[in-house]
Image 1 (tube, rainbow, N blue to C red):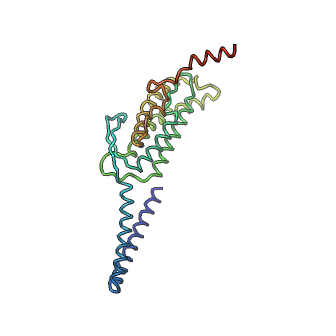
Image 2 (tube, rainbow, N blue to C red):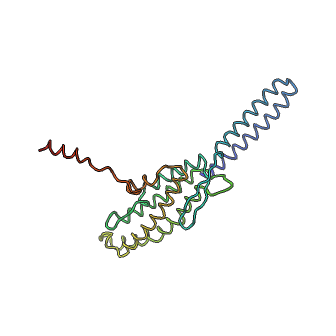
Image 3 (cartoon, one colour):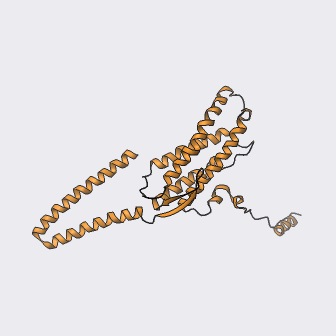
Length: 244
C-alpha cells in the first residue's frame, strides 16, 4: 500500500509537470496571437492552482492540539485534522469493542479467546495504519504514534510472553480445561493490567476523534456511576393487582 501511494504521488507530480509545461507553451503561443485568449488561459491556470490549494487546505487546515495521558508517559500533545479524526474514529471503534478493553473476571471467559481478540486487534490496527497516508504535521504527535505505541509497548510484549506459554500447555494437555493451567491466574492478572493500559489508549483515540462520553461506549452506564432507571413501583403494583 505504501508503494502504491508513492507511485500515485509521483504520477501526480509527473502529470502536473507536463500540464504546467504545456500550459506555459500554450500561454506563450496565445500571447503572440491574441491577448484575450491568453487572459482566458491564465484564468484557467489560476483556477487549477486554486483547486489544488483548496485541496491542500482541506487536508491540513483546522489543525487542533489535544493533550492525552498515555501509559508510561505523562500528558502528550497531539495534533489532529479532519483526516486524522477519521482514522482515530476507526481505531476507537475497533478497539472499544474488543476483549482488550473489557474486564475478564476470574472464572469468566477464556484466556485463549482474549488472546485471539488481542491478536485480531493487533492485525486490524496495523491494517488501518497501512491503508492510511502518514500525517504531515510539522509539530506535535499524531494518531499514528499513539497506535504504534499501543502495539509495541502494550500488545506485543504481552502476546510474546503469554501466547507461547498457553500454546505449550494446550499442546501438552489437550484433554485438560484451561482452568487447569498452572499459570492461568498469573496470565489473567497481567491481562487485567493490559486492559487498564489499553483502555487509556482507546480513550485517547476517542479524544482525537472528538467522541463524546467514550466511557459510556466502552464500559456501559456503570462506568460513570449511572444506573438504569429503577422499575416504577406503582406500575408494578397495578400489574400485580390485575393478575390477582
